Image (cartoon, one colour):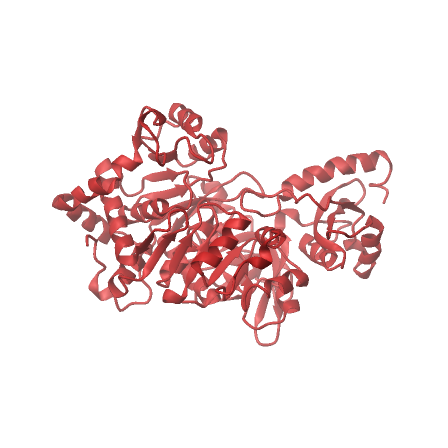
Amino acid sequence: MLTVPLREELLKEWKLPLLTDYIKKWATITPNNPALVSTDTGQTYTFKEFDEMITLYALQLKKMGLKKGDVVVSQWLAWPEFFMLTYACATIGAIMTPLDVRLMPHEVIRDMKKINPVAFFCLGNTAIRDFRDLVREVQGTVTSIKYFVQLTPGGIKQDFLEGCLNFEEYFAPAVLETLKQDNSLIESLRQDYYELDTRDAHIIIFTTGSTGEPKPALICHENTLINNAVFSREVGLYGTDNRYLNSMPTSHVAGTCQGPMTVWFTGGTVISLSMYSPQAVLANIEKYRPTWWGGVPTMFRMLWLDPNYDNYDLSSLRYILYGGSAVDVPFLEKMSTMAPTFGTSLGMTECAGYFTATPRGISLEEMAGQVGQVFPEYAPVTIRKPMNEDGSAGEELPIGEVGEICVHGPIVFLGYYNNPEATAATISKEGILYTGDMGYFYNFGSYLGLKFAGRRKFVIKPKGYLVFPDEVTDFISRHPKVAQAQVLGLPHDIFVDGVFAFVQPKPGEDLKPEEIIEYCKNMAAYKRPIHVEIWPVNEPFPLTRVGKVDVPSLIEAGKKIVEKLRAEGKWDRS
C-alpha cells in the first residue's frame, strides 16, 4: 500500500496535528475497518484503501502543479471522489472549497472572485442538471483558474468541454497506479506533508448567507480537530460502533468538518448519501444500519410526513441530532421514538461546526429550552457585551444576563479569506469570536446550560425593550394547534420595531390569529405580536440551501403584509 506514513511517535498520541493524520492512524491500527460506504454504488473503502486513494490523488494534484496555499473549488456531491479529493488537498496543503450544486452561474462566479481559485473540479451534463453552461461562464470570467477538471459519470467524448480535463481519465485507477513508480514525486509529497502545521488552512466553507451575502470562512486543521473532539463527545460512539449516515451537502460545514471528519476522527464509518431526500434517508438507514444520523428540523419533519415512514426499520439508530433552529417538546417527543438518545448543539461555520452539546438523560422540557453545555478545555464560551470600538472584546456578563455568545480558543477559525475588515468585525483583538448569536447561561443545578435568544441582527426593539424572536417563537410553538412559528421584528412608526408572527397550524386544525393573540397574553405585553399571519398548512416556510428557515425572505414577505396593514390603519397605531 502506498502512503505517506504517520510519524511513529504520533501513533501513541490522542491529539494529532493534522486532519489527514487520523486517516493514517486508523489505516495503521485498524486497516481493514470500513471508512467510507457509497450508497450510490454500494462500494466500501477500508481505511487502508481510503488512505491509499487519498495519497494517489495527492500525487496527481502535485503532478498537475497544485501546491500549498492554492485554493481548489469543487461543485460535487458527497461521492467518495469528493472526500478523497478533499483529503488529498489537505495532504499537499491546498485549500478545498466545496460549492453547492444548486448555485447558479452568477452565484458561483461571485463566490469564486472572493477566493481566486487555481482549480475547479466541476460537473458536466448530469442527472441533476447540465452544468456545462455554468462552466463556460466560469471559464470566461474567473481568470485565476488554471485547471478545469470535469466529472461526467459515464460521459461520452462530446459531453466534455474544451479546456477541461476528464476526471475519469486523469484520475483513473490505471493512471494513478503509475504514480507508485514515481519515487521523486513520492518523496516530494512526503517532505511537503511533514512540513504542514496544525494551523495551516485545509478548507474554505462559505457561510450560508441567511443573514447576508455568503462569506468565505478559512478553517485550519486544528479548528476542525477541536470541533471533532467536541462533537464526538456528544455523539458518544467510537470505532466500528460509529456508523454515520451523511446526508448533508458538501458545501455545508456539517457535510465536511463536523459530520464525516468527526467520524473519521474516531475511526468510524461514513455511509455517504449523495443528496438528501426523505425516502433515501429512510431506505438507507434500513439498508446500511447506521448507528446515528442528524439534520435540521425541516429534514426530520419531511421524514415524518413520508406516508411509509412507519414501515421502515430504523432500529439501528442509537443517536440522532437536530440543529439549526429551535424546536418544541412535541418535536422532541417524536424524536424520542426514532432513537434512544438524541440532542442538539449550537455551532457555526466559523467554528468548523458545533461547540456545545446537550447532556444525556435530561427531560424533554429541559432540552427544548437550551442548546447545550460547553467544553471549556476545548472551546470556552462566554457571554459578552458588544465588541468595543477599538476591536477589543466587550465585558463578560454574569450568569443569567443576555449578551452575545462568544467562543474562545483554537476552535476559532482563521478569518474570512481576503477580507480583513469582516474578520476584524468578528474576531476581537484577543482572538475571541463574536458569533452574532444572543444568549445566556442558565444554572440547571448540575451544569450550566446555554440558552439561545436569537441572532443579534434579528433582535426586536419595541418601545426600547429587547425582544428575542426565538423566545416568542418557542412560546407560540407550544400552542396545541401550532405546527411551527417564526417571529420577526418589522418597522413601526411609533415603536421602532413591531413584533410580527407567522404561524403555521397543524394539519386539520382551524387556527385563527385571535387565538394566538389571546394565548400570548400569558407573556409580557411588550413581547406580544401586534399581528399574527396564518401560514398555509401545506406550504413550508422558505428555506436556505441547508434547510434553515430563510428569515430575510420572511422579513420581506412580512413587510408587504405590513404595508397593507398600514394602509388600513392596523399596524402603526396598534
